[in-house]
Image (cartoon, rainbow, N blue to C red; front, side, top):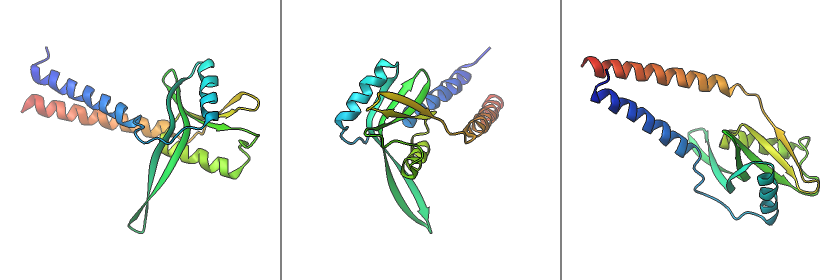
Length: 163
């Protein structure tokens, strides 16, 4: 039988999980979206994606010799399909080839700043959507973080139960 303290602890963990989900997907800073981004949003909506943010901006902080350097990363669109989040890179006039070094660097910035499941390249000339995924073993980090959180929760629960 669970006591009132048990319910408080469970509610606290649920609240922390909810807070994490809100903060993780917070896009408070946005730039003005381009007209082509609106067209791409409509194309993605037709393909079953939910538009979460337009012209979303996140920041990456680099610590170089003790000095913090902030880099702005702007995504054209952030979309969801089911539980999977994607960053959409909208291109026109055939400028979105992954063979382009600048595009590859931008894709890696998106992966670090937005932590998406993949990057969608939307070619508006051909109205074609391509999915780029990067395998970087993030699942292992997530698994280790979840195991640590469960172990810490169990220790806190046992301490609260016996004290």
